[in-house]
Length: 636
Image 1 (cartoon, helix red, strand yellow):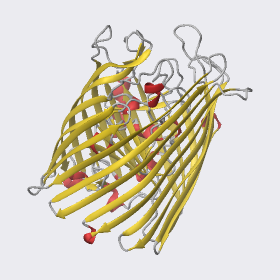
Image 2 (cartoon, rainbow, N blue to C red):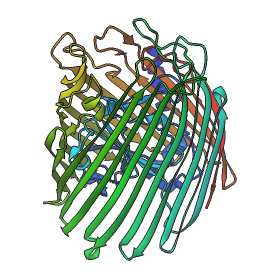
Image 3 (tube, rainbow, N blue to C red):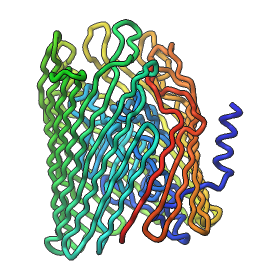
Image 4 (spheres, one colour):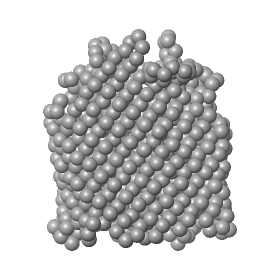
C-alpha cells in the first residue's frame, strides 16, 4: 500500500516529461493535453465532426504528440492508461489482447480504423485483437466510453475505439522515421512520408517489429517471439470544389509464437511449439460532395475488412486451425445544416459478413456461413439556446437471421462561459450474434437474439487558471441483457447472461508552467454478474474495480525532456466463480528524449521500472523490467 501511494505521489510531484520533435511550441503546449484541449473536434460521437464541448458523451482523445512523448509501440498500452479502460494480454507481445470499456466484454468494443470496422467476423465473439495494432502510423485515437449503437450499429455495447492514421499536410511534404532497440532483442522501425500538391494529397507509412519475447506461459521457460511488418496509406483527389475521392488502405502481417494448454484441469498454458499467423487487410473507397455552400455534406463509401488467422505446430505444414473472416460494407451518410442551430445527420448502410473456421487432425471440422444486415439511422443536433447542445437519434437494423432491432440515444451538453461543461447522456447498444455463435457445428444456435444494453451517464468538467487546469468527473450505469454465453448445460451458445456495471471516472490535467504537464485519471468500476445461478452477484472476470494512471512530462529550456507514467490496478478475479484471484499491481516507467539539432532526437525508456511481477490473465506471463533506446527524425 505504501509503495503504491509513494509511486503515485512521486509521479505527480516530480517534474518529468518528454519532448517529441513535432511537439507544439511552448505557447501552444496547453492544447496538447487531451483534457485541456476542450476545443478539439471529435468525430466518434455522431460519426461526423463535432466540437467536443457540444457532445454529452464521454470521449477521450490521444493525439500524435502524446503518442510520441510516451514512446509507446503497442496501442493497447496507451489505452490502458485512459479512464474506464481495462486491458488484458495473453502473455508475450502478440498474445491475444482484449480491451474492455467500462467493464463490458472485450468483444463488445467496436474498433474502427480510418472509417473501416475491423472486428473479426471469424472469431467466436466477433471481437478485435489489439495485439497486432501498433502506434507508428496513428495520428489520433478517440475512445468513446458507453453504448452508442445509433451511429455505429452492432458491437458498440461497451463503446468505440476510433483510430485515425496519419493524414497529409495542407501543402508541402513531410517525412518522419523512428528506430529503436532494446530488451529481449526487440527491434522496431517505422517511416512515413506525406504531402499535398494541388488537388492531390497522399501519405504512406511502413513499419517492422520483432522480439524474442517471453514465455507466454507464466510457468514456461522458452521464449515466444513475435514479428510484424505492415503499411498503410491514404490518397485524396479533389475533383472539383467541394467534391473529392478518398482511398485508404491498411495491411499487417504478423507471426506470434504461442503456448498451448495442459490436457488436465485447470488447463493452464504450458510451453508448446505452436505459432499463429495473422494477415489483416482493411480498405476504404469513398466519394464526398459538399453542396449548398457546405451546408449539405454527403459521403458514399465502400469498405472491406479481410482477416486470415492460422495456428500451426512448429515443423508441421498442415495447420491446426484456420479462420477466415471478411466483411464488406456499403454506406451513405448525409450531414445537413438548414440553419446554424440545427443539424441533421442520417445514413443508410448494408454489410455482408462471412466466415470459415476449419480444424484439422482427429477432430477435423469445417464451418462456413454468411449473413447480411441493412441499417438506417438519423440524428438531430440542435442548439435551442446559446451554450446548450441537444442530440437525439434512432437506428433501425434488419438482420437476415434474427430480424430487426431499433435503438435510441440522446445526450445534452451545457458549455458555460465560466469554463464549466455539464453533460448527460443516454445510450442503447446492441450486438448481433456472431456467425460462429449462430452457425458453428454442434454448438451454434440459429435462434439467438442480439445482446442489448442501456447506459445512463452524467458528468461535469471545469476549466481553471485560464485553461491551465481542468478537472472532470463522470458517473455511469449500464445494464446488459440477453448476453450470449456458452451454456454448459446444453453445450451450445445461448442468451443466458445479464450484467451490470456502475462507476465513476475522475480526470485532472495541469499545466502550471509551459514546460510541465501532469495528467491523472482514476476509475472505479463495479462490474457484476446478474445472471441467475451460482455466480449471481460475482465480479466479472479480469475487471479490477479500481485503476489509476498518472503521467508527468517536463521539458528543460535546453531541450531535454524527461517523463514518467505510473499505472495501478486493483485486485480482480480470473474466473466467473471468483475463486482464482489476480493480485493488483503498480507499474512505473520513465523516459527521456534529447533533440540533436532541428531534425533528430535521441530517446530511451525503462518500462516496469521496479520489476513488478503480475498477471492480467491467469497463467500467462508478463514482462519484467525492460529498457529501450532509439532515434527519431523528422523532415519538413
